[in-house]
Length: 284
Ligand code: NDP
Image (cartoon, rainbow, N blue to C red; front, side, top):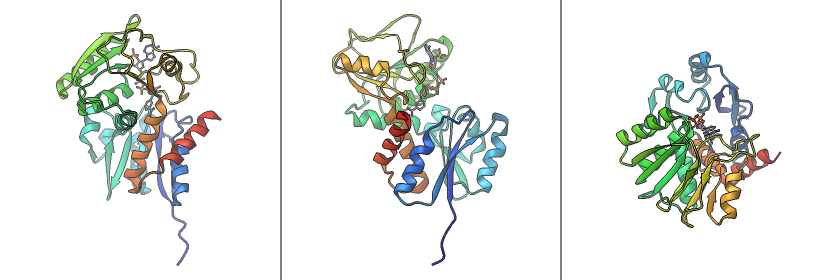
């Protein structure tokens, strides 16, 4: 049989994009499974996005990821957007079906998979989410779709936090409530889970930590962080030292990636390979 040199292409479009680590885990996965696929990290300025997506179609890309600032703008350039990505209002993963590009959001699903693996089933639970940006939006929508009873959105910017709460109350069956974050937020005994969905603590801002007081929280509360780098943020360290169960941001990042891998290739993702590739990249 003749040698096949053709590569199947996927990648991420972002601006800036140089520090996006996803290529490390996706390319490690392709190599581990012996797939002739390649994940490219592509810088695309905002006004060039329509042309870039046309280019990906012409090049036969099997799909792609979108990161800041393209997650919302890309939606208008696709043939279809999944119902939950539409509810979140952002697409981070595009898959191809024939010659159609379909938008998905795997950020919140990756988060959900991580919390379930940590033994936390969101149905009926009361969960505090710190932040109201893109990550918080994806996480709260997926928690609501998974049956969370109460979502308490704590955010510094009042308009942004209130808008997310209004959206959740209008479009999901969870009860959402907004709390302005102008001083320490005290987690009370009714809360089952706390999620930092802000960028506080993200590299290189290693000394920062969200202003939350866990002293009245129940001992079985799960404390989660979305920050993947460093995986062991100050919040994770503090929560762990006080005996709380914790879930760091690495699992969300790995699982949003494994979901993308499976959508693109149709094969089960080599999760351990992907996780260890990312861990090595962050440790370097
Ligand atoms: P956005 O810019 O959309 O939102 C940032 C949020 O953080 C806002 O709610 C903002 O509050 C809040 N915030 C930032 N700094 C402060 C501060 N000093 N005090 C209080 N609130 C603050 O970002 P994203 O939602 O896209 O990303 C948030 C984090 O999630 C990033 O660190 C990113 O790395 C991480 N992430 C992780 C993923 C993973 O797979 N693990 C996937 C996606 C994101 P305000 O509205 O008041 O400005």
